[in-house]
Length: 401
Image 1 (tube, rainbow, N blue to C red):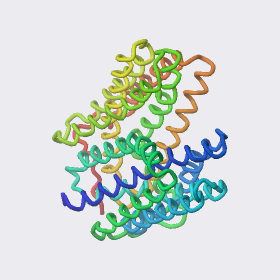
Image 2: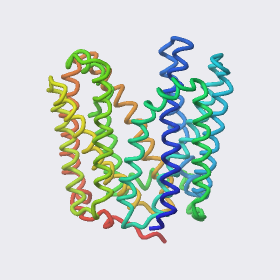
Image 3: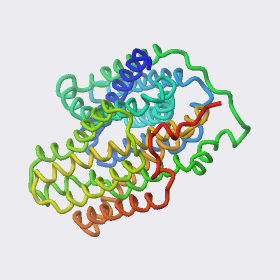
């Protein structure tokens, strides 16, 4: 592994992930303070996910047919421009919402290209033997950024208020500069014509016995088992704790994920990866059930820690498999499909949890989610023998032509 190259890559991802996570918190705070309209907060999320849905086919094709390094640099620069534009449009509290939402949409467009490019380039800058550890490290960094971003936003708003967006622009600019330091990685030569090029990622996903199960398991486990949207209800109505305890609850999955990611990065290449994947999914479902039935804060915190740690194991295995089992000339398009599934399942999972809880109540909703997550794990174990019987992750490696 070229350690310096990976350090440049990892540092850039840290800065851009932290900036993006901080933006969501900061923009939500300032918009709601200005308009007192909860729908504005919904639009912030919508502006982030819609471009990914609209562009995932095109973004994947571009990532596979243009230099990925240049795409990452360009996306970082666009994000820096967006942050500068938001800072200028707010102008000390005089917020222009149409401009803000247009800039957020542009930010979403940049992320639609950035996400598959940042995943697809990783196998080109690390060895296949180190890829699993590299995924664990980058996943831990992303989880940490999602945790620290809101905290950083709160501190920076208290300190510099609307100046926070200039700070984010600096972070994004430095991130783009670090990506520029990566070695030149030539673009792939296009294979096929017309729609074959655009739909190559979808077709590969639907036919591959490793990639399709990996993406499908992520989609259904997150959609059916996610509990994060219901944490405020559990804190107030079930555990009867204050906002500080809610903060601890929200941090536990991230803490479990980060700690497990650090451990995975230090361990040698795992054996019986397929079975370990399904064991981690079973533990994930069990942690949801324990959380559902808990009436004490300490048990709930422990269950949420296991929830995050077990999810990190499965994320590490699935993400590495998707990258290593996909030919390099298709990694951008397959990564775009994967990122779409992740984004949509997260959003729909929160919607599913909230809407079902309105009918069945929070406890029954989480119990049902645990049961369905376990069914997904057991069903996947039965339906996907090639994934179940996989020993080393590198056994799934595709030899690029």
